[in-house]
Length: 458
Image 1 (tube, one colour):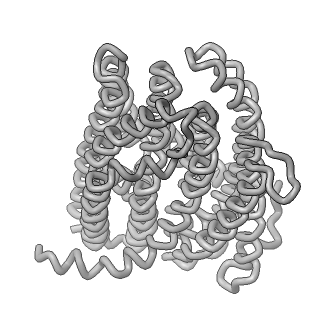
Image 2 (cartoon, helix red, strand yellow):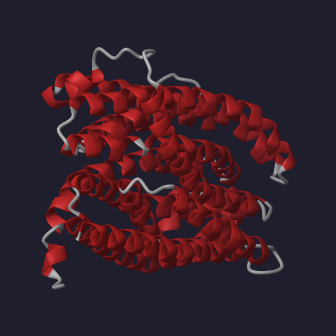
């Protein structure tokens, strides 16, 4: 098949994906701002934010992963012009995400004592605990926001969550500046100030998105007059059957990155701070792939509703191609600027911490070279996952992600990440191995299923 059959889809794919990319980049930018501002306080403070966020990311992965079940079901209902089905999916998804957000908050409160038995630097743990308390509560509005976001993505109105995220980011930067450093008469709260900024901005983000959707004709009827507690078993079961495996897929991936943070902590505060810098930068480029993953989920879900499986396969492959192109560009960016980018996160003019700062920058620069390598694998695996979710295939991909990250990736990270082996670089070699295995296996799974659907339709 000629290349133009794929490239002609680029424009619409990017139109659908770009607001999601910008919105997801906005989520990551909150973390970027926290890291850059907190990094001015010192390596211990930056490591504390890293440790606190490692717990947050695990819980967040479960909530966000679960919420992705809403998108393909809404996309399918939208292609069928079935309003009642679409509203039912949203209402039940909204209910489940609210309950899940509260449960994840409670789970994090109960998990705090684990910090003291994880062989982390004690000064880092003491700083991390008050930070974690506030950011844990911010998960409640974030997961509820995800219910709205995944619903509106399913209607292909992807720009509205982006607007809400932009507003939240502006607010977060302002609150961070005022509270971290104690400006305009406010107390100097350090990393707790960053946590307050995250909490307030996520509540504003949720209510602003609801307000936007309640104003628009296409979405107003979905998000107003919701009988929240009038629930039915069948849609709850369907969302749960799709959502739980999707949550586990994201959990397995995020958990191995979290394990990388914890393993880095055993190497000291400087290694952990460097790991946080490299993870934060690579997570921003990953959000572009995440946007394309949502586009794959929506477009595959639409074509599934129309039962046009040849177009489904071609459209998905066009998204794989544009994802690969972006990944190569980002890989080159990290290689070219790997020495410069870590400087953004530290205070180079602080003579008191000059030795620690130099070590953090040196380790982070090396890790960015590793991040350049896994850009390609990471991009392809998340887009393949999105396409498979659009097909509502979730059980086998869950097994694939578990094997890739925890049977292949984690043992390599654990053994090569010891101080006497390759240290921080060894941890990231394991990440590369896990992501590469996932990319190959998920792509083969999508190819197998779509060929089977095309044959059955012939």
